[in-house]
Image (cartoon, rainbow, N blue to C red; front, side, top):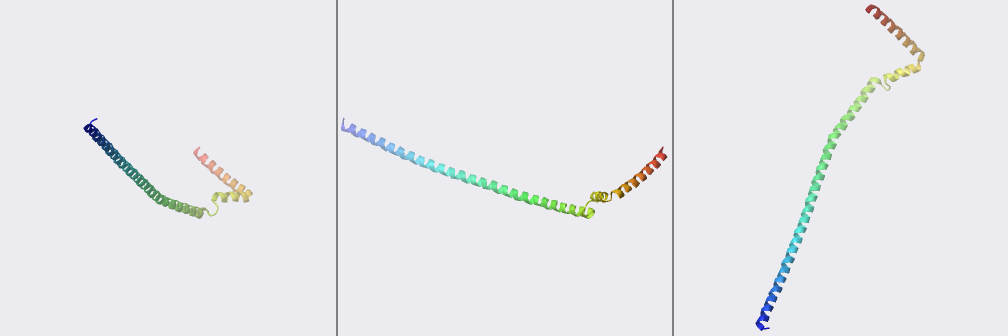
Length: 136
């Protein structure tokens, strides 16, 4: 081969090697930029996730506090109502109710109770006979 041809082939070969080296550098730079972009996207996504999580957590905490405040008022009102109902019941009926008092009276004095029931029955029967005669 001639010297010019050898020099031309060597020049072309050097240019190809330079182009390949330059292409490798460009690919390496592009890969590094892509890697950096992916890292940035990952960090941004993490930050947005944590922000959203904290926002939801704060919202739920606020909702819980408002609900607690709202129902604590109901709880207080219910306790007040129960206390006033108990006071009213005790004022009207004392320690034992009227029905309990009647049952205890009948249990303690059965003969007297039967006598009272008999007298009441006689009075009711006389009233009914009197009313029936006038209407008939």
